[in-house]
Length: 229
Ligand SMILES: Nc1ncnc2c1ncn2[C@@H]1O[C@H](COP(=O)(O)OP(=O)(O)OP(=O)(O)O)[C@@H](O)[C@H]1O
Image (cartoon, rainbow, N blue to C red; front, side, top):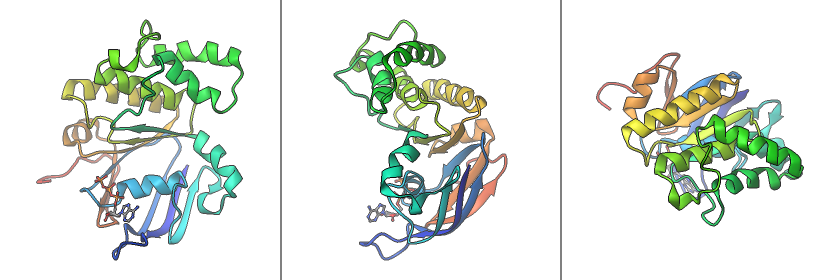
């Protein structure tokens, strides 16, 4: 589903590469934690998958797309198939919960009838039925993250990229969000999650890819965060 082949990325203003000869393959339906200290290259990894940037060297594949080679007009289609969830939720604060989720479908031109059918379904999936008409500021942080996950998932992406999705949440709420991400993963969606959260990585025992200074220094099938980090 995702393949990086000898990928290096050096930003113009930087001397050392943000990614340095990274080769990683992620199969459909995998759940992968991307860990490493601040500046190790996790966000760069995700940005290359979304074609927000292109590698300086090497090749990036998502599904069958050679991402860096995609014509510009095809990039929206790639991004439609990749859902994104962030630490700071990034909801539209002047729209209700249902409208936030619906908006993701409106912008890609989904028919109104489809939108009215699938939005309640996905809100139920994420445990927000009954909250469709609330505004984001009337929700807890965990609930806001559920809205963000619903919005990322409503179009059934191939891949869900989660950048520190529990970074603003307390441990119990974080566990609930992880259960939700696991449920989404069980639908066959590939999940890649960048995190600094030791507790979560250690409790889930999923694949762990660790970056350090832009290099993959560990790739464990059922990993933990690591001793002493
Ligand atoms: N747009 C940019 N221009 C120049 N250098 C950048 C840019 N984005 C990232 N970098 C550099 O690339 C390296 C990797 O950064 P990246 O954001 O990928 O790390 P990260 O692991 O996601 O960090 P964090 O955990 O803090 O989000 C860092 O040295 C960073 O300073």
